[in-house]
Structure formats: C-alpha cells, structure tokens
Length: 402
Image (cartoon, rainbow, N blue to C red; front, side):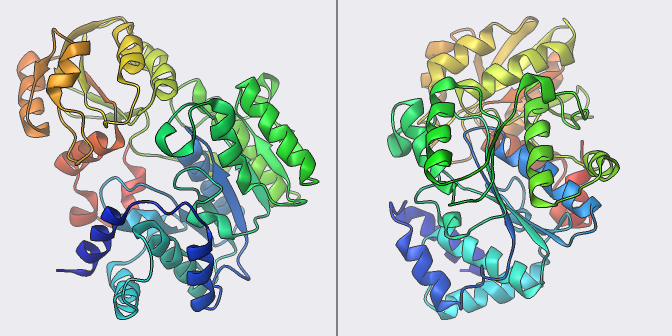
C-alpha cells in the first residue's frame, strides 16, 4: 500500500471533537506554525473561493504565499500550494514517509494539516491562506493565531456534527476568532452575525462586516452574484493582513483567480457547467447563475449528492431553474453517496446512470448542455474524466482551467 493509500485509510477513524490532539502533534513537530503568518477562513459556503482570491492577491503583492484548502478535486497535492503551484510529488512523498515512520500520528485531516505546516515552514512562506476543514472550534487548523480571521456565509450543513441551528453552527465557526485579531465577516444571516458580533466583542477584536455597498469596488473574477460577496470579503481580509495594499495590486491579483468546480464551464461538446454546490444555500446561489449562463436555453441537469444533505430543499430549488429539459441522477464516487433510488423520489422523471461515463453518454446523445451539481465529489470525477491535469500537464496549470 502506498503512502497516500495509507493516509486515506485513516479517514475511517472519523472526527475528533477536540483540538488537543492537533496541538500535541504540532508540539512533537517543533511547532511549525510558529513564525508563519496566516489568514484563517471559516464558513459554510464560499471559504474556498475567498481563499483562492486571497492567495492571488497576496501573490500579486509579491509575497511567497501558501494556500491550504480542502477537499481536493483531482489530486491530493492540490491541498498544498505555494504561489499557485501544488506541492511537487517527490516532496509530498518525503513528508508522507516521515509520517509513516512516526506511525501515522493522527487522523487524516490532522496529518494533512501538519504536513501543510511543515511544507510552508520549510519553504519560508511569507503568508499562508488557511482554510478550515469543517467547523472551527475543533478543526485541526484552529491551532494558529492569524493576522485576520474571516467568516464567510454560514448556513445549515454538517448538522450532525456542528449543530441543528444557524446560531449553533455560527458559534462553532466563530471559534477561529482570536483575541485582538481583526475579523472580516461576509455572512448575511442575522442570527449568525449576532453570534459573530458577540464573539468579536468578547475577544476585543475589530469587526468588519461586509455590506452590499462594498460589492462593486472590484469586479468578481468568478461567476455568480454570490461571488461578489466573496470578493469583497477577500479584499477586506487582505487589506487587514497587508497594510497599505494598493488597489492596483488587488486588481492584478483578482485578474489571475480561477477556482475549479465553482460555476466552471468545460468546453466539451456539449458544454458542461460544473458547480460543487452541496447544500441548500449553495444551490440557492448557483440557481440564478445557471439560469443566466444558459440564458433561457434548454439544458440537462446532472445531479448527485451525499447522504447527509437536505435533499428536499436542494431539489426544490434546482427544479425552479428555467430550461431544464431532462434530469440524470448519478451516485457519487464515495461511500457516503445518496442512492439514485432515493434521488428518484425527488426527481421521478429523472433518468439514472451508474457512473459519470454513462452520464456522459446520455448527455452527448441528447446533444444539450448540462449543469452538473450536487457535490464536489461529482465535479471532481468529471474533471478527472476530461482533464486529468495532474497526470497529463504541469500541475500548476490545474488552476488555470476555466
């Protein structure tokens, strides 16, 4: 079994509801987080897009910039980037061999986070854009004290872990707020904002809440009205992290942003619009974007979703998008996939397929463009099928695919 297979097998051990094991692991490694500077980002939706924009702006400012995100789409290497380029394969293997020699001392995400810290420390990065995995309070990334904490959109998701109300979820995510560290918040839910305001006040933090009046200072590099909020959050965060940051630098950085799997067109025949919207709020965001992208023309909907999602709410929103000619339901390439038999209850007219290659045959036969959504696992499978970028091209070019 190879290193990555060994590491991925650790996912079966589940989640630890404590930050202490990660602190102990960091201590054993000599605290690689010390001496690094971070922009820490949490939220239900949008945190990956904000992270990508922050990274591009920091790089445009001349900083050697680390980016740690999850999940990956095509290659595990995508999670660890410096100046937009994934970690080299040989370098990754070196860290993997080290963790194997230590008996794999943590969960999958703890070791991944520790690996990121070692890589960014060894490469002496100037700034690390640091995305939480899930939640905040007990997330392995929460051992750092950043230059700025960022809270993006907060909504119901992962309720079995984070809580069954928006307030409970916001409380978990707001735990990335550290004493006297500036906070940027772009969420619009009043209950979530109330939680963030209280936590920031208790922690003596300056709080910047993004408002609608700030959305058009810079044009969003990504499709969708919701990305205007993410762009404004990224700009505010980087202005807090890099004093004196000039508008020209921000604009230059934003012009270089590409974030695969989020309202991403693939120039196949017929064309595919990919979006990893995986909860009701995310689907609410992609629905008007898809309607605008297809411009009233007929299209196909390809849908697959994980078991723990609010399928009824997602299906209700998707069915409202004008122009859907047909629906294809497909299981995810993941053990947590919702069976297509369950999906049929919400899309009784839907055709079913066993895998993406079978879906693609149906899409091509119909000859209409398609929206592929419901999960990043599904989007990743599509990208691997068409692009296989890490295997076939320079890995740095993965992030230029639009």
